[in-house]
Amino acid sequence: MNGFDVFEGETVPIKAWTRGVPIEDAAMAQLRNVAGLPFIHSHVAVMPDVHWGMGATVGSVIPTVGAIIPAAVGVDIGCGMMAARTSIRAEHLPDSLAAVRSAIEAAVPHGRTDNGGRNDVGAWAGEPSAFALERWADLEAGYTAVVDKHPKAAHPRGLGHLGTLGTGNHFIEICLDEDGAVWVMLHSGSRGVGNRFGSYFIERAKHEMRRWFINLPDQDLAYFPEGSEGFGDYFKAVSWAQKYARSNREAMMGAVLGVLKARFPDLIVTEEAVNCHHNYVTRERHFGKDVYVTRKGAVRAGEGELGIIPGSMGARSFIVRGKGNRDSFCTCSHGAGRAMSRNEAKRRFTVEDHVRATEGVECRKDAAVIDETPMAYKDIDAVMAAQADLVDIVHTLRQVVCVKG
Image: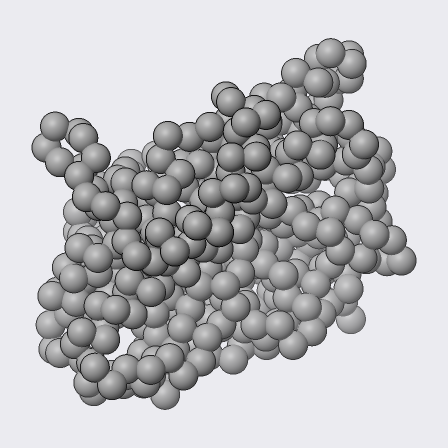
């Protein structure tokens, strides 16, 4: 028996791993819009953390032939996860983890900051870390090649944002696995420079649709046809932003491990999960054809491949091994998925609710993070049950420290 349900689309079907996890009407409408496009290959795959997103649903896999939809990739290009298991054990940690959280917050700029933060008059204060400088040396030429041709895509703080966390659902966590081993896990992407690239090329694609009088059910489904100048320029830019996002996570991981090593000089990394994107586009072969696969809020889960599926603040997270399920295009969910909008979470929950939900986790417990409270997300256990034929659980993690922007 298959683990997915099939919904009819105008051009191709929709295969959804959502049993026991509801799909909101707005998200289903978006899925049907995508499934009606003429260049979708085979079907659209839907993960159990699916919810409405700009242009296309978060938690969907969109295989295309001869076209790419920039808004399906989104503006948080290359957003993803990185996790490392260390030799530290739970019993080595102090009773209070407040100092550890403060040290991480000092080592990794977070929120709406550059590398080094901003001073009280808003000027850039501080210098990029050694981790960031080392990685920028490998990135600068590619960035220059994109913005020399597209000056409006330039961002003033490409280097300044490298090695920084950002805002929203991005986080750095210290976690314990089922054996008491300490893990570092973090979630971020390509920051301001990726956002600028994404926004710029989304508007360029919309312009092309208007120029060619192509009518779409949603203007955010504007696409570049393969072979066009826009397609080539976008693929080069998005590939660079994905590389930047990976480097950003590496720089932050280096900084956090440095914080821990200062307290535990004998620390070594004993196991590392893949540094995996979950907002990206790449070339792959599926069902006998070479296609472009856009995973929007979804992680590649090829046979034997490791991935990371985080829960929300206060919920469990998972290191998983992919089963290589062909129907899912070798994919699994990227997390629990939002159950409601940020504004709805702020209306519905109080600081007291959030404090109770994050008991035992050293994290922010103020009104500014209520939109990230665990109740704003779907039940991670239900999400994992719905994708049992996509991944096996290798490690189960629980957070003890969470840093948010």
